[in-house]
Image (cartoon, rainbow, N blue to C red):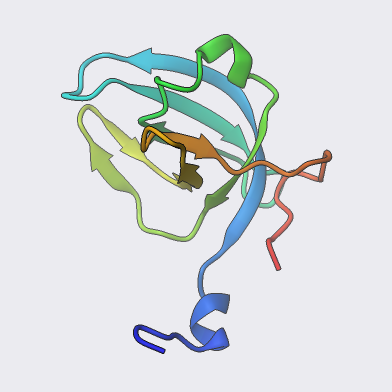
Length: 113
């Protein structure tokens, strides 16, 4: 298989569940985004992410939503802020992100396996 990785490589990616505790529109970028503060539990804490999800989500509906994110990438400068985690999603029919979310409540900070 082309571009195959080992299971060991997959295990290096730390994907955790977190709950969005605040969400604010950021219009200071070329493509507007939503700045998310996500609670990953006591071991990881609250982390910030900038997500270009304004086509499918409004800030009010995101509060208390559980999502999946990669928590062990290095922080990345995105416009006027530092994004600490990468939220995960799939493209919808219009190629806009649809966030990955557990279908029932899980503990913040649990790792995907």
